[in-house]
Image 1: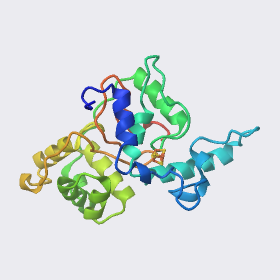
Image 2 (image 1 turned 45 degrees about the vertical axis):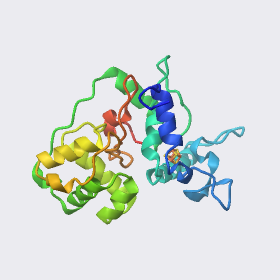
Image 3 (image 1 turned 60 degrees about the vertical axis):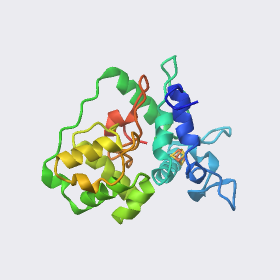
Image 4 (image 1 turned 60 degrees about the horizontal axis):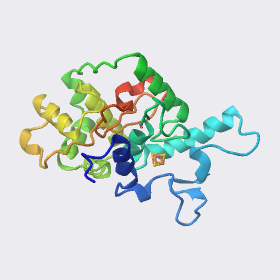
Length: 244
Ligand code: SF4
């Protein structure tokens, strides 16, 4: 079935689980120690969901576990797709996947975003002045984004680690006055319009996915086209105590 005909939930699930880097997700079983997470072998696989043992865990332990898992998410190659699926809402208006960490957000953070999205329309950010966009790092990311699609390639071409590149892309998108759900094409178009890129630097046709990834807690942005009728965490930006 083509993505266009698919229901949004199935499309989001497939975009995540059939992504070419899904096998390399941070919470996948480590190849050598399958009970541990590939992204951090100090973590067991239940770090994303919490213990099911009697007595549970105390608050400090839970926070430590969640922070460690989120740190892995922030460097996960499918964080954006995972975050989109983690924000999917069912016909009953509740999260389809209400437990555990998804896309760098805890279950509580995802629930809070959902509640927030029901209460208030989310305004577009105000475009930033040129000098805030014309930093060496942001221009490097924009030039890389103009010719690369995958976050890893963008980071490599921009000469920075994935997390920094993702964070810069999130900032660029909002500083251009775009919604965090803006597509890569929209980001590039706005950058050209602002004179940050020349049109001839945009070397590949921009697809309708991917614009903003991001960091956690205040600097987290996301990419991947929003799905009509579904909660988009990108729109809520940094409001939640936290995209993933
Ligand atoms: S972003 Fe999703 S797939 Fe990646 S490590 Fe986090 S929970 Fe796992």
